[in-house]
Image (cartoon, rainbow, N blue to C red; front, side):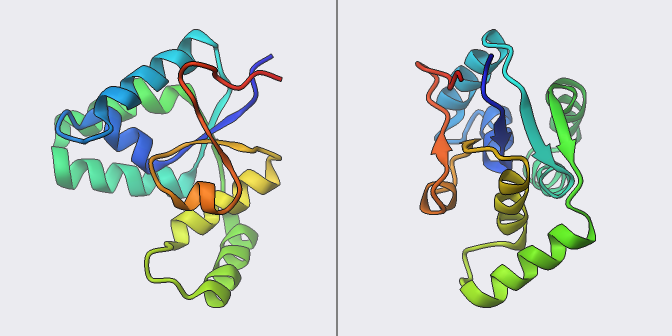
Amino acid sequence: MVTATFIDTSAFLAALDKSDKFHVESKSKWGALAKAKAEIWTTDYVRLESWSLIQRRLGSEAVMVFQDDFLPLCRIHSVGHDGFERAAAQWRIARRRSLSLVDLTSFDAMRQLAMRTAFAFDQHFSEMGFFSVDDHSIPVS
């Protein structure tokens, strides 16, 4: 059985943006996750952030690919009021300009779902102690 993997905005964006420095690596990792039939998760906040960034940077066609090809692969965790409050409290403690509320809700969701592996090109995940997807050895339990 494949361990659940959390998908961050950076992984969605890199897969869709051919000019992204992580594009090739992202496509490879998406392929490895699909081949492993990995259980992949994201949050409603990441979905919204991703949609907004993809629309702004890449346009409506890329949004359609995101919605039609990527989102159906994901289980969506709802952050909800409690998740927002936990993340907001963490933000107040950290007060780091580069650490977004969406990142903090992602970390909280990963803890709530007992997940340790993230597909992200955002160093904050490793700083918080989460493991990164390695396309040569997709995590298996």
